Image (tube, protein in one colour):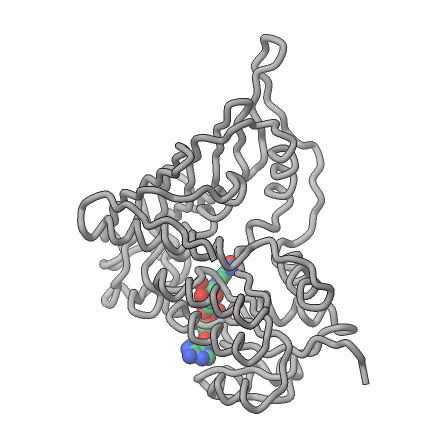
Length: 354
Ligand SMILES: NC(=O)c1ccc[n+]([C@@H]2O[C@H](COP(=O)([O-])OP(=O)(O)OC[C@H]3O[C@@H](n4cnc5c(N)ncnc54)[C@H](O)[C@@H]3O)[C@@H](O)[C@H]2O)c1
């Protein structure tokens, strides 16, 4: 019998649970045991339990949380169920890592953050790009003031024909939106993290549905173009109370040269940077210089994300991605969608001091 073992439950036995959460917990089998898995589709839970030797399967996460004594939970469902599953797990006394985006609405993200505080449990999100070596290295340069005040950023998450042909990614009711909430969220969060998560002030967004609702070349499988209820492109501008601004573009399909662009560019008073790949720009001794790392540590960002979560649960480390930042992120995303719908800029409400 292992002592001080983290007893983990998985909610949602789909792609991300199989590729990221479960295998990375299993790398720490000396201190983590995946005890149970819940999925509304019994077959999915059963397949995953058989493949990874998980003892208990459930078709309801409520039943799993009522029946099994767990310390930590991974929430890996479609976005619509993130909030309820997370809140239930926190109330059952579990630490939670919930997949991105935090939720569907700001009210949900706020309730998730409040519940974590109320129950004194960790709530972190699968914002995996924060754990990349590029972001880690650039953060150290930024903390050493190499960029100075960062006042402008550009965020791109743009695929040429990358509409997911699996899961429910083209279903607005279950996901809350399209590329903005699914992949834009990663690059937006990366920029916000590196900028110190400034308080958002006003957002102005536009969305398009031009390519996704008709048959076309599918580089990420054949998608359900007949039931395509999301935007295929979102664009927007975000201003912050400190005067900074971000310009964002995100698309599952757009007529661009590159097939897949995930990039963040930062512009500060002392320097600028492109993050993927990492390159920095400065002016020194009357010379414009570029700084390129010739070596960065190679470790899978998903592996680091799960390692950090385990360390938070077992050793009291603090998560790199916090529940309050999740609220801020959700405000921007939902604000951009609201702005696109209304055709006008939206002034966001300031964060409540909790
Ligand atoms: N961090 C990343 O890079 C990354 C990558 C892919 C997906 N994700 C996120 O992970 C989540 C899941 O995506 P996926 O690709 O694994 O989807 P998926 O469709 O492969 O799997 C989702 C699973 O959840 C199950 N499910 C649905 N409702 C449920 C409920 N109420 N209770 C329990 N199970 C339920 C489904 O039956 C399915 O098995 C999404 O929020 C997505 O945004 C993150």
